[in-house]
Amino acid sequence: MSIPELDLERVEDRATSILESVPDYIWNGQTLPVPVEDIVDSMYGLMVRDVADMSQAPGAPEDVNADQISGLLLTGLGEIWVNQTEANRWPTRRRFTISHELGHWVLHRTGQQKLFCRTAEVLSDQDLAEAERKVTTRPAIPVTEEEANAFAAALLMPAHLVNEHHEKCRGDLAKLKETFNCSEKAMNRRVRSVVELS
Image 1 (spheres, rainbow, N blue to C red):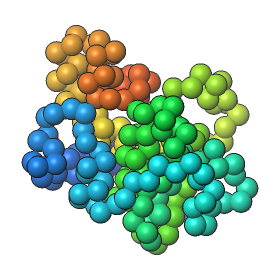
Image 2: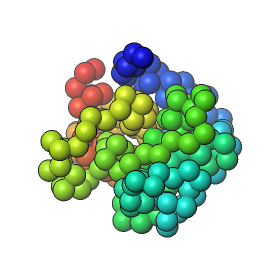
Image 3: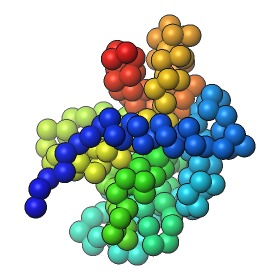
Image 4: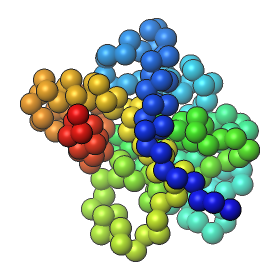
């Protein structure tokens, strides 16, 4: 069995095409932050649930602490479950987790009934210093998780808008973070990958 290759350009293009297809009554393509929950609901018919006990999900792995699951996609039910504790503590992470799970729906759902995303795998919006210290002990993130992270970043922080607003605010990361309603770390990564490459 071959290991899939990470194709960030394909993922970026997919997120961009989705944003371009969003009807004006949901999002006009310019106003920020991107209304990810409206997109998930109106365009894909997915219900977002904030769940206190993630272990209650059908088919939840028995070997994992429910607090270690940031989000999950139940394709059969058409639901995205978000860890309520994390969502309350880090609202920007909630947006990222929803976008990440939509990435799985768009990119990886064929043949899968459920996808569980552990906290360490939904990394792009992780603001915890402790997680950074553990990075050397954590196993490699699977390609599908990296793709879902890249998709979430592209959806929440569209490249053309990042460039436009970066120029307007002269690179003020705090203003960008507030404008896009994302974490400082996610914004910093996106600026490095979008602005510095253009």
